[in-house]
Image 1 (cartoon, rainbow, N blue to C red):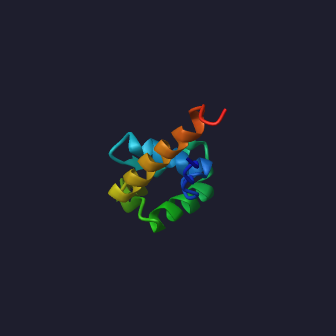
Image 2: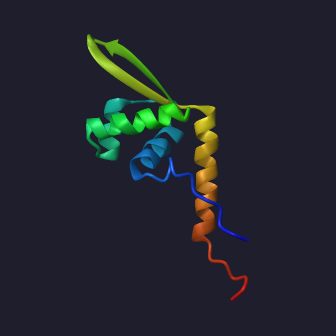
Length: 100
């Protein structure tokens, strides 16, 4: 049995980190994601946009105390893709004894 292909959109370290963080919370703001992933604001913005375009996350922009606030949350499609990625990755980590 061949190994399943890993989703290239989620295979990026920063996008995978964002999805991992969002999988554990209802939503997260941009500052939290930036701090937890140790990324630059510009790079994080680009990667969030790619996840949004794939319909893996929703991005809501608002103001809080006159400051812009960006909040992200995972969509159902994103959760399915993330869980599938994790399951496929497990196949790479489990040693195959067949054919040895």
